[in-house]
Length: 369
Ligand code: TXA
Ligand code: MG
Figure 1: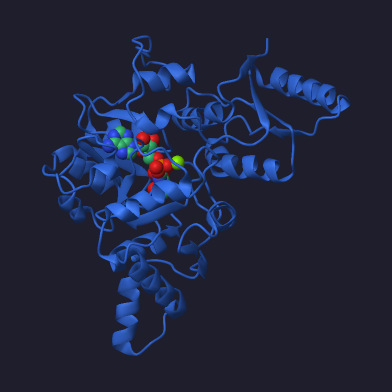
Figure 2: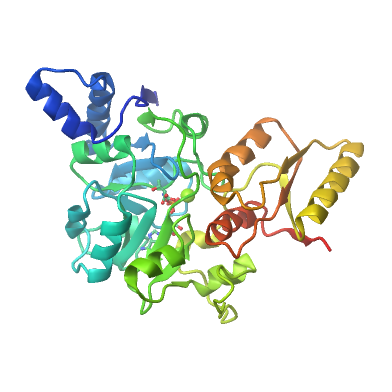
């Protein structure tokens, strides 16, 4: 398949509204060409095609959420197991009515505070939402992304857009257009190439159907941010806490040993993994740096190419922004071994990045003392 690549880096602000105002005045926005491309991509989506698009978190691979054949093509293009449900993306909060029968006050408060933005909410699903989108669950994951190209695409398509991250299943998520081009060229209809993803890790997934709102996948929007808006308790999924070996917020009780399976189906798969072997070192910063230096020298002496990922101790947002791109870069350089310094998982954002780092390394962690 010949994949079209459309440059949409020029789009900004409320694209469609500005285009309309300018059209009425006979003025130019400077975005005409990019908008034409969005409209042509939206036509392709509506006709059952696959379109990758930038969002603020990572790039997504979208299709019409109500078109089962198109959804099947998304799973096939990614090589993704079909029991791992997709997030449905909408362009206005009010569009959620097509997906869920009940809108709760919690949903309204969170949408008002955090949408558009890196929050996915799990809601009861309407029967009209195909089972293939939700992996047979009776719930649906919904998000309104904070990106002009994404929002314009969904609005112009006129349908909710089911979209997983636009990478080959199992590998690092794409935060640059070139990542999507490398993974999906020849497998999908269109790639909307925008600038690099601002956040760099996927959205926080929050289950609003649980008794207590529960974070199933951590992101840069933390339990504290959400609890403040809800003015009530927000917990992390027990399996998530157990697998991260750490509880965000010193005062929280992990409750982590109930043997629960992760409730976001996607959390159980091998994920975000580079081609290289990867090892995480945790402990005091100085000691970790020294041990990484020692292991690096040792492995290089044995003829291995070694890559290192070390973030500044408290630069959590920068770590989120750069992590996947670093993994891909090291794979491109053909390193055999990646040595990564752990981040402080007691910080909510550090915890979210550590969640990705642990999965990438297949949970191989060495404690340096
Ligand atoms: O930031 C993001 O969320 C990106 C951009 C493209 O929006 N999307 C993304 O999608 O990360 P994906 O498919 O890579 O991850 C979706 C996650 C998976 O862990 C999946 O299991 C979970 O959301 N999920 C989806 N629907 C669910 C549901 N009904 N109940 C529980 N978990 C669900
Ligand atoms: Mg993904």
